[in-house]
Image 1 (cartoon, helix red, strand yellow):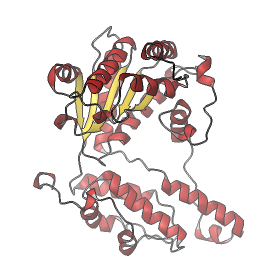
Image 2 (tube, rainbow, N blue to C red; image 1 turned 90 degrees about the vertical axis):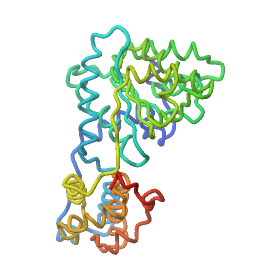
Image 3 (spheres, rainbow, N blue to C red; image 1 turned 135 degrees about the vertical axis):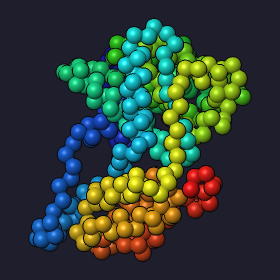
Image 4 (cartoon, rainbow, N blue to C red; image 1 turned 180 degrees about the vertical axis):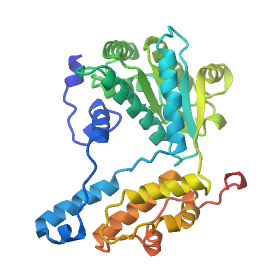
Length: 339
């Protein structure tokens, strides 16, 4: 277990969810108090240096992804926690979950919120046991090989990955740590990077299956349009399909939930001149502009908030929203079924 305390040098590394320090920081941040906004009078009374520091804090607040409780997030967390409980008594053939959908529809958010819920529950059940590692989060590298998959697990745990380390060494080290640390949920993002049509991809899939048999944990995957890819094809794909539940993400239609999402994001703004319900009155415009994509909506509103602070206008208007450049996918015409 001493390897878990090894110093992974580099401040950026510690912020990555694919490292144990980064994941723990993400969980701890969810427990922190939200930023307390000042009134306009209090803000104007600040000295210049204090005002700059407060503005920096507001920029950080809006730069962070403000997670809202979409139906997709709620369903993913509910399904994932159910699987974790059902898998507690399983000796083999544990059930898992795949979060699948188009890009920018909240797959990673749903996956990490499941991990957050599990970690917080585990901390409540095992008070004072700081050496536990309830959740592992990795991303699948492009053209992943079995050794690359094993190395991602090892890097998360802070285990050394040497050029001389073979896949057996890495696998045994990872399994040993996870078993001792009480790992109960393993999140694997970008699973679409595994293609069963290639030998490396098939072997990488087998490696994940081997980990799932050796580690008494629930596995949850996330990837782009998995049902249309090769991951569920052939004999290996049939095995995955037989053990995994599918959770679909999608663009949101213009309905009550969309309006609620916009309202929740607007409630998180810390801007001194912003008029309440400005964005809720623009919710149809926002839906048309973002194509109903939750990731694009978040970028749109947070980007406009950052501009409002930097320009000192302190409010978001329709013109300010139009000034924020969006991703290419949001400008593409939606299929009729998604309307």
